[in-house]
Image 1 (cartoon, one colour):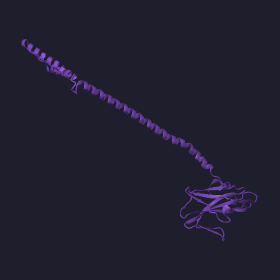
Image 2 (image 1 turned 180 degrees about the vertical axis):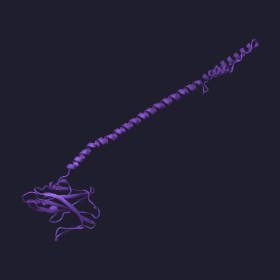
Image 3 (image 1 turned 30 degrees about the vertical axis):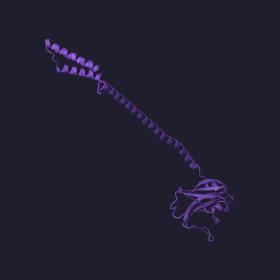
Image 4 (image 1 turned 135 degrees about the vertical axis):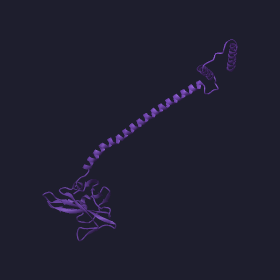
Length: 254
């Protein structure tokens, strides 16, 4: 119907122009006026032409859609930036927590490290006699007397720890370590752990029995077997002394 109306209108317009031409000269339009008429006609036709996808209405709709997409893209970008900032802030908080949480335990561990060691005499529960570490030696065999010698097992060597039992009192002191049945475990340089051998040496610290006069001392030893060559130098030594199921830590320093 619209096409018919447009055709009828165009025909009437043409007839009127022809009729008018009989009496008066046809009006000649300038280029600007002709362009304005063409533009208006194109606008009117495309506005109501449903089959033309490039019509004015479709262009406006496409522009609106593009603006909406740009807006949504900007919103997504802002949201991603906010989430990234939140993640960074959370990560920074988590990095701070371990540092804060370990500060106090570190101080506690330092204080405990200073408190955990006791003297060898206290670890053995000695009364009137003090046990003093005097040094160590690495040997293949240890001989305390002509009658008895301790040899290292095959592939091992002996780490001999020397301890003096000292009576600093004014009276003779009885010292019976054998009755306490102690056990000794040595840690060398924080890595090597070995248990003391039980020997029949008269000067074995773990089985010592004797009387020590006032101001005198008794020289004793503890013998540990270590793999040959495993100990080249000793920086630190600590010993765990267990008596009646109760253990104590002793730091061996001269």
